[in-house]
Length: 447
Image (cartoon, rainbow, N blue to C red; front, top):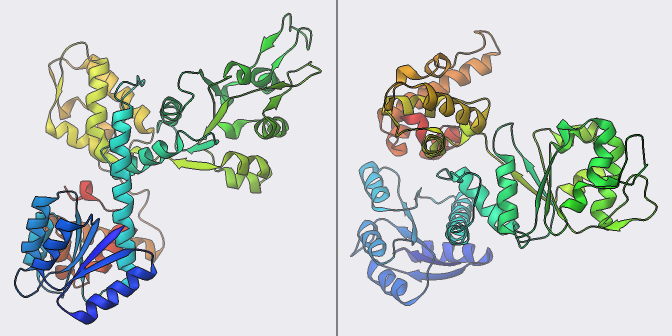
């Protein structure tokens, strides 16, 4: 990554250049806006760190010209505290971030790493959109939220590898869909995708279901039967609810993963298998390992790559797209949804996640009388604000609840402008961002 440092103070330029060089970045420097524009025209620069107040062209003027020439260029502006109106203006012009002097180098490093990660995500998403253009997925992937963009970026990078993937998420978050996406993006996409729900199989049928059996292996085995491992030959085997796998069978699964060989029930000879294994769970597997309910060696063998699917309440930006997709899927006639109803859908927490939203839209599309779903058509629980479980609790918990509400009210008052909200609260913008992260406040909460 090539970073351009723009500052009229030589000491500041040299300090930032030295710090960034030590972290492995290639660094160019400019002492004014004109020089910065010239360097950006000549070199492939990924990120600009620029002082806002400089002789000649100011930082906001340079930013505007840079964005005109390269809308994808990321710019972090650095200036002294206090210029609230200017901060709002430059962020509207397209600055990626805004730092106060004196620069906290640890925070600067974190901001740069965040920019790098976002660039990688955007590149992967662009490639993935091209790759998935002709792919047939059971449902489209709603990924307006940053959390889902991160997940899809990871899916894109891991899909073509041969390694086992552990998909973790609450019930209804879409673990099977991510598994299918991993399969369709892999080199095994032309092979079978075989799913086994470990929670739905009786204990006495697990081994036969996974590895198959020979004729006469047990009462009722009237013919030879291939197991799911063999059925997934050349493709992908997806073991859902892996936490429900009986402890006695975990050792056999571990051996199959390590040796790529299985032994059907009643067979004398082993058979080679070639299937990539994906597993999913909503259980706390590390806790199950500590309790002796899940083998530690199997856990580490499965957890080569772990993917965490965020619950729907942490990716509310995706709800409008999901609603639109479900209406298209289930509505027998064109149906619209009024803004007030969509607002209620976005604010609801969905304990059952995407599956709960899907069933809700399916019912609404079937039962609504007119061409528009209105707020009054929604079930009562969606229209009730979440209530605290009780009015008791530790003092710290109640103080935190008050502090969260105060932050929320102030941010709404200033329309989400963090600089002004921090000033009104009498805290620094850095402290405000920390508290927003602590209380999980995002743009949707400020509406």
